[in-house]
Amino acid sequence: MSAIATTRPAARRREPFTLFELFVLFLVAMLLAFAVFGPFFAPDSIYNSDIVNSLMPPSADNWFGTDDQGRDVFWRLIVGTQTTLLSAFLVVTLYSLIGVAIATIATAGPRWLDEGLMRITDIGLALPGMIVALGFAAAMGASLRSAVIAMAITGWPITARMLRGIMRQTMEQPFVAGAQVLGVSKWRLMTKHVLPNSLDVLIVKWAGDVGTTVLVLASLSFIGVGAQPPSPEWGATIAAARGYVSTAWWTVVAPGAAVAITSIAFGLLGDIIQVRRDPALSGN
Image (tube, rainbow, N blue to C red; front, side, top):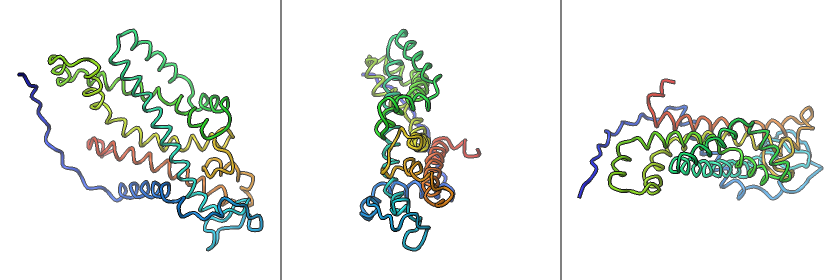
């Protein structure tokens, strides 16, 4: 019986989290807590119109004021966190799975299949993703589901191209050559060895993409092809309130700030994960 000897590198001592990193992690944890638990605590009044109290400014009773229907803006933001983040997670997960599947098939398949899939991927990369997603969403009918499907369809090329390059590099590692000598089939080699050892970078990309996706979903809802009123999704909330910017600024500023903070928080989370994976980047 033969065996492949592997040498594990010495475990690197992890540096303690900085105050800035702890703040970002706290912010992300708070957003996730709002998404999970917020709807359970929200009052039923956020779904009902109360015209008498419409466009009331921020106060002790309504921290972020009320919208044109008299609904509490703060609680609609909290409930909208679930809709917005869940949609973003779903989009990123779907196109990541598509990208992983295409990269795996391209790496494991014959050369002609690899070339064909990569040319299709290059075409996808050459097209403006936002415009293509807008076209798909409009063709399927204005709704949050249409926006999610459109973004999943148009978002996979970057993941596929990036992962295919990483998997090619992994295929050149000694442990892969050793597994081939032992007679491991190509597909088993890909699924059990090459793919698991190539997915680290996707964790970083996934975290950063969530922030970008929140912004794009809000943009699609704002221009009318994403979530529709009375959905508490942040982009739809901004779209419904854009006529009151000069008279009731809080109806736009609050959801706009929520989109900005969430996008930045998850983008920074991706950076933190990347630095933790490669401490050499900490100086940057």
